[in-house]
Image (cartoon, rainbow, N blue to C red; front, side, top):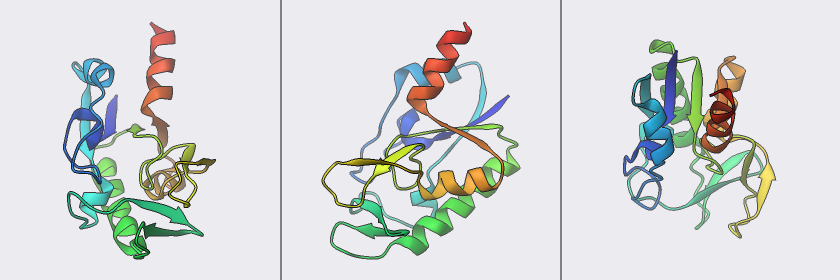
Amino acid sequence: MMYAVSACLIGENCKYSGGNNLHKELCSFLKDKQWIAVCPEVLGGLSIPRECCEIVEQKVISQSGRDCTREYVEGAHKALQQIQEANAQVVITQPRSPSCGCGKIYDGSFQGRLINDNGVFVQLCHQAGIKVVNVDDFLRKEVKRL
C-alpha cells in the first residue's frame, strides 16, 4: 500500500513556525512501507516560516487578517495531484492544521479552540474519494491490527 504523509510529520521543517512535528512512531511504521511526503502550504507558495492561519467563514485568514485562501487551495490541488500520481491510497495528516487537519481544526479565533471540521487539503482529498486520517487515529488503528 502507498501512503502519503504530511511532510512535517517526518521531520521536514515546513510548518508555519519553521519547525516540524516529527512523529517518531509514524516514522518507525513507515520504515518498510512505500510513501511520499507532501506539504500543501509550501506547494501553494507560502514561505517557511509564515504567519499562523486559521479557517474563518470558508476562507483561510492569517492572524494579521491577510486572506491566504488562494495559496491554500492551490497547494491542496498540487498535493492532491502528487498523491494521485503516486497512487497513494491513504493520506496521514497533521491534526488541527488549516490544510491537513482531519476531523478537528482551529475555530478561526486564534484562541486555540477546536471545532469539528477538516482543512482545505483534507476536504479536497475527501472529494476525490481518498481516505484521510490524522496521525494519532491512524496509529491507534494500526496498533490494534497488530
